[in-house]
Length: 180
View 1 (spheres, rainbow, N blue to C red):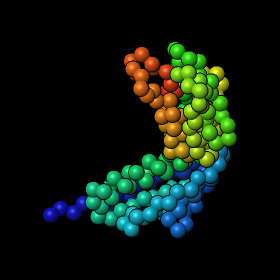
View 2 (tube, rainbow, N blue to C red):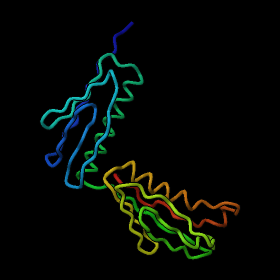
View 3 (cartoon, helix red, strand yellow):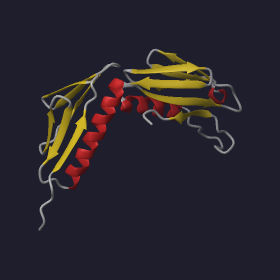
């Protein structure tokens, strides 16, 4: 039986980001805001030094290897979010009935979708900003997961039901993904 090598990953922290790790909670503060996330696993250790985050796992199995990579991806997304912002672009497409969109509190309201009288609504998650200018919609925020989920909520709220989707291609679609 061969011994599996230990995994050690390092993430360098930009100068504008302040990192704190206490009780399995990693907190990052940057120009755009702050994010916190719990990283809890009995075999994976996270150490924060001056400008380096070290993630280590001794004798990892397949799942621990995958989880270390997941931790690295989440931390990189958090660093990018607090230093820049994630921005998604969406487009309103219609050929039958003109769609009117607006933001009301923490809901995105879609009116006159396929001529329906009742407006359709999509939930906007906390910390996400949505701007609707005509047919263009911009979704911004520092947490990549919340921004992506808000975009998914908006797209999902305009699913065409009980009609031929080859003819009725109306809806709101994501045109540019944030973080790329």
